Structures are given as C-alpha cells and as structure tokens.
Length: 444
View (cartoon, one colour):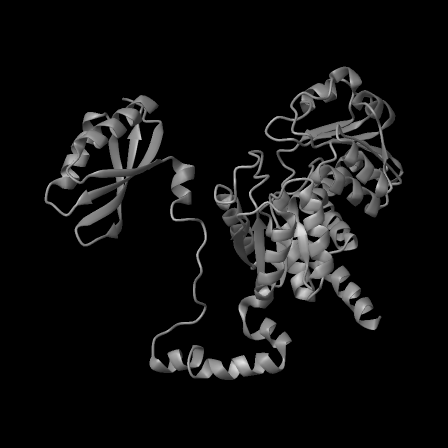
C-alpha cells in the first residue's frame, strides 16, 4: 500500500457548467492524487471556488497537477496550492465580529440610530467614558513598518501582516484583548510617530512590532513621551522580559546569584540593548556588552553598562552569557568557561549549540527555541489596560519576568507559552505594579 505523505489544498475556480468539477477530479486522479475534503468557499454568478484537499506521494505530483490544471483551460483556474500552514492562513487569521445580536428593529435602534446618539453625547461630555462604552478600552494597535520581520529582515509591512495577525490571535486567546494590525508604508521615524499619534485615539495601547534598529529606539522613546497610553516595542522589551525570566531560571538551576554575577550580552541591537537594561533594572550590578557597532556600545554605556572589544574577552570575564546576534556558531567552544551559564538565543541556529557548551564545561546552556515573546506581551498589556496605566515602566516589566520565572518548573528554562495560568500571573503582577504607579502619578 502506497504511503501518502504530503497533503496539499488546491483552491480551484470552476465555471458553472456541468462536468467542470469532474474534469478537475480526473486530472487529480491521473496525477496520482487522492481527493479528501471538498469545501465550497464562494459561489459567484457563473463560477464556484472550492478548496480541494489532495494527498500525494511527492512534490513532483504537485508540480504535475499544477501544470495539468493550467493546461485544462475552459474557465478552470488554480488560484493557490497550500500546505497545512498556508491553508491555516487562507482568508487571514483574524476577523472583526459584533458582540451584540441584531435580530429586530429594536436591536437596531439600541445599537445604532437613534439610541447611539445618547452614548455619543455622554462621551462628548466625559471623554474617559469612551473606555466604558466603546471597544477603545480593550484595544491595542499592533504597528509595523515591516523593516525587521522575524528573522526575514526588511520584507515590507504587507509581507509582515501574517505576523501581525498572529500577534492579534495571541492577544485575543491569551488575554482577551482586541489586537488591531496597522501597516505603515513608510520607514521615516517622523512619519511613523506622526501617524501613530493621529490614530492613537482609537486605542488604549500601542505595540510596536518588527520595527528595525536603530530607528525603533527613537520611535518608541518619542511615542512614550508624547502619548498618554502605554507604548511598548515588543522586539525590545517583550524579548527582554522573557530573557530575564530565562536567566533567573537558568541561574537557579546552576546555583548562581544573578544579581551578583557578571553578565555579558553579545549583540546590542534592539533586543540585546533592552535585555541589558532589563538586567540592570532587575538589580544586576555588572552588565557588559559587545557589538560591532560603536553607537550600540555607546548606548549601553549611556544606560550604565560597560563594553568589551572582543567576544573572547567578554566570555573570559563573565559568569553568564546571553547572545542575540543572529550569527550561527559565533561562540567558539574553547571560549566557554567551566561553570558558565550560556543562553545562545538566536533562531533558528544559535551562536553555540547547547550540547557543545555543556561539553566545554558550562553549568547550564540553552538556545532560543523556548524563549518566546508570547509569554510576555499579552499579560503585560492586559495588566496595564486593567490598571488604566498611561505607560509601561521597567518595574512593571521586571514584575512580569519574575512572574514567568515563578511559574517555571525546576529544570525548565521558561513555562509552556500557552499555559493560561502563566498569563494570568503576569497580568496580576503587572497590574499590581501599574496600579501603584498610577496612584503615585495621580498623587503628584
């Protein structure tokens, strides 16, 4: 019996002519494909679009299918061939839906005209009531210019939309927040800042996502100063929160006092600099860093860290090494000191494989596969929204990291990213600190 290993979904348009679907089925059969589910996704005035799931033995059959369907003609069109991941993204991963039922004229009058006019008047007189009577109080803008999408780089905001939709899914599923993707067709920091300020009225928080270094620093700093709602660049602070949690757990496993240790950060881009600042906010007295960019080293020193001129020298002096360079095999095995903690966090290939670091005498070593920002940002924003905080401080972020570390099982680096209890603990920790912060601000 032939082992059918590959599953693909064909999105096919057929004209409303008897026998059209049969022709498609014949072509699939002649190519050696086995038809599974057939789903009608759109019926037009003279055509039908269906998703047809097909099992095949190898990619060559898919290529043959594509070629044969193209030659078939007669109004039959192959729109897309998707694997399981692509199929899950068809039509996007998010949608806007009504929370109220519209079943009668009374419903219409209550949610739209004339009833809605009274709500508008209330908000006109007391603008803060918008957080009660609209979705603004539970909405966060997910803003990108597409310059640093995952590990793909500057591929543009539209190509980055699947990532923004993914963030929105995580906001919804893990924290009950409306995450709204905002794609910007500019890389100019001034234009980005101006645009975000103009749209900010519709949101109670701004998550900056996949915006490259160094302009991400200016954008976040300016928006934090000029807006009265929380702003966070996830590539900086979301990464830093989860990395601090990982460092706390790793040091516990290795029997090292993190606050008294010497920590070396290799790579001082958006994530690396934020990790260094987070460590200092946590109470680590000796934070060192290295980067090929002198401006990056100057930024670290401006925040109170110190820099080295070589990776070898940094590793020779530090107890804990954190690397976020994106350069595989950057750390040589002979540089590892016995008893060190090595967190080589670049994906998909770390700066040094954990097995090699452990062979060289490291007390603890891990890569970045489990260090996922999803452990941080949903609960952080849920906490500040609950507290109606106007900004996100390092004390809130440290509280989030400590909550994540407290939920980590002995021997693990961080908890499972979909553990709802973890997100609840992060929310509560951030909300406590944020509420205290807001009380102090109001008192002043």
